[in-house]
Amino acid sequence: MTAFESAPALPAENVTAEERLGALVAELSAKLADAISKLDEANETITRLKNEILLLKHWRFGRRSEKTGAEATGSLFEGMGLEALEEIARVSEDAAPQEAIPDTKKKGHGRRALPGDLPVERVVVEPKPEEKVCAPCGTEKISIGEEIRRELDYTPGTIFVREYARPIYACPQECESQVVVAPPPPAPIEKGLPGPGLLARVVVDKYADHLPLARQVARFERDGLSISRQTLCDWCAGAADLLTTFNELLRREVLLSKVIHTDDTPVTWLESKKNIPRTGYLWAYRGDRHHPYVFYEFSPNHQRTWPANVLAGWKGHLQADAYKGYDALYADGDIIEVACWAHARRKFKNAEPSDGKRTSPILRRIGALYAIEKSIREEAAGKGLDFSAPGEKGDQAEALRKDRRMKESVPALETLKRELDALMQLARPKSPLGEAVAYALGNWKALTVYAGDGALAIDNNAGERDIRPITVGRKNYLFYGSERGGDTAATLYGVLNSAKRHAAKTWEYMRDLFRRLPTMKVNELPSLLPDRWVKDPDNAD
Image (cartoon, rainbow, N blue to C red; front, side):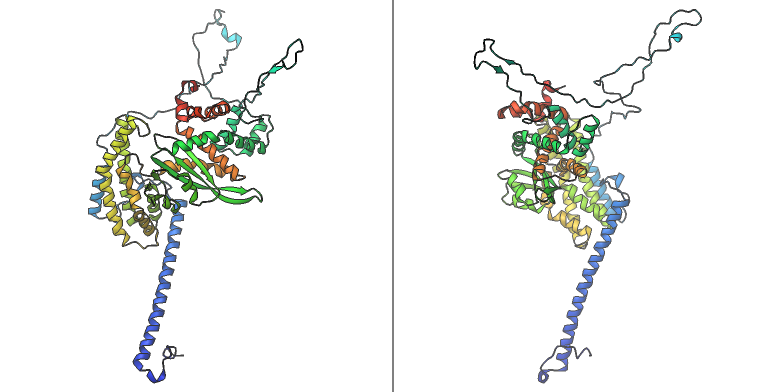
């Protein structure tokens, strides 16, 4: 069949040669356009796969650090013009500290001194008796000093039984109803076996040190104590039940913040009836410097209703990633979105293996923004200011940061925006660089809002740090046995990581909570908040 024979049929009496030729051209043009479209699609797929291979090779064999300074740029200036180099140099000079703060601390050498509060077991090693007698004259030698060698040693932790004896008293005359006995002291878990110290050890070992319960069982057996994994699981659930009201206090305190950092991470839990693995999530909500606590919530899925329920009625700045489930929260303007430059930078970092010449200048620009933040922190430290302090020092630190950002960060962001707009016209939309540019420009308002408020951070790294203990723990214990197990983990992670935020000794803190909570009234609970607990001199030991 010829090309003309395959052309669309036209009424014979009305067909001319020109019309038949035009129909053929139209059909071939359509086929050509379709072929070109498929070729473009195939090229996009090939490019995407090549980029993924480059990225995987980079992850496998390249640097893992996301640093953007001179120590991590490599061939940063390759392919850049003189004008671009001069502009980067100017931004770097603007970002430098106004006054260099000398580093007076010198790195120590050799072995570090041992802590002075450790108990010391003194062992005196005497010479042989005959060596203590002077050979020439036979006189007994006297001590003129001593040589000391110190070593660190360990003995297994002591598990002991605390016995509460309650004497029973009765009238010797056998009067009725005169028998008396003191009420039993409250226990952390009603009718449970563990005391406050042992319960704190189990909880801290699993949720702070990421030691699964099965390994704890083996360790207890080495100490001569037989406790089943299910019993330890019940103890953790009982500990979370005891902390329910206290955890709600943490939640209320966090929601009083003007700035909240949030992040989430997937966890596996088992559906109780059939033990089918499901994917749930733990959400972290981090309060600001005036309410310095962390609250967690477990959800059996990733629906947007979970953060919406937690943040219902709250007003302030929410620093988070670009999860679409948060978008509804920003609709009425009560919650202001604050995006994360670490996320944006990571996307450009992932694009670097496939398009380093065009990606490196953008990474350098973002690095300049972080250099400004570092300079601000150094200036604040030199003036004795503290960004985490709830009082005047914190206020002054935030005012300093806002002023420096308006002078230095805002111009740097404007330059970066122009470069991203230009790059958007050059990068292929589905390439890693194109996707990175689209992400940055699509979230530009949320990425730049930090520059106008000293209370905001440049990224959501604080929220990600609250998630990191969970990601480490799930590698060890793999899954939660039920939805209740997820709720238990959320409660215990919240209390423990709030304590870590204030450098509280976690075991001592948890033991004190388990010891005191059974007898405390609700209005007394604020005294046990970790920032207040560490300042109480009675808790110093």
